[in-house]
Amino acid sequence: MSEFLIALTEYTFLQNAVIACLLASIGCGVIGSYVVVKKISFLTGGIAHSVLAGMGMAYFYNASPIMGAMIAALVSSILIGWINLRWKEHEDILIAAFWSAGMAIGIIFLSRTPGYNVDLMSYLFGNILLITGNDLLLMLLLDILVLTVVLICYKLFLLSIFDEEFARLHGINTEFFYILLLCLISITIVILIQLVGLILVIALLTLPAAIANQYVTSLYKMFILSSIICGVISISGVAISYAPDLPTGSVIVLLACASYFISVFLKQFSSQKASG
Image 1 (cartoon, one colour):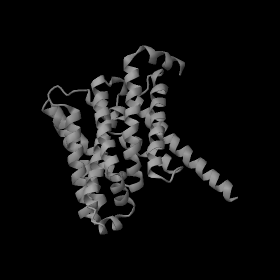
Image 2 (tube, rainbow, N blue to C red):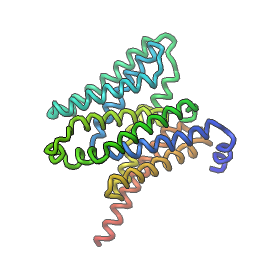
Image 3 (cartoon, rainbow, N blue to C red):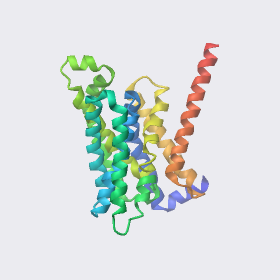
Image 4 (cartoon, rainbow, N blue to C red):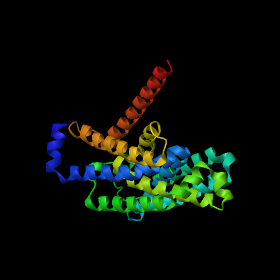
């Protein structure tokens, strides 16, 4: 740990990594809370994995992979949301098909890309140590966008999630806010891609919020606690992986998993102790 702290004062790439952790934890904490409360992690997985189609196309046409990811994420969030609203009976199969098709399309385009760009691995599995100042600026702008929409629509989201029937009776277009929420999830996925990669993004999006959900009952408090937990886990992952040169994204996700299981155990133990 001391080696990491010394390096942190000397190397810009480590400073960028820590800032990226803090920026990612904001969107992750807020939007992850909605994912956990709404119980839509499977839908979120469908959105995340379909992003590979956009990234593969972007590489093939020599465009920005992040821009391709953003477009694919937004398109897939709208389509998956529509599927979920219209074809509820076949929801799991359709989303699984969408999930698989997105990855298959991405792989096909990548296989046809001349001089296949190995940088794609950093998007699949994350490489937070390669984050640049421009990446941080993009993350900041996306965070601002997410937080602005959440602040403006907070009460409407709240009604749509916790009392959909009441919201509908009062003229609130719950379907619109549902799709909007999925779009915010897609933006957050793009924020997290460089932190832990496309493959591992669901764990970081859901586990800190799931931990926070065990200790608070207010959604607003859940936003704050989840963001703090995500930030602590992410920065700790960077610190632990630095000296032994381990894959940072994988270490972050393992820490998130371990933290969740420990939290569940402690919560269960304290409940049994109180009842006994």
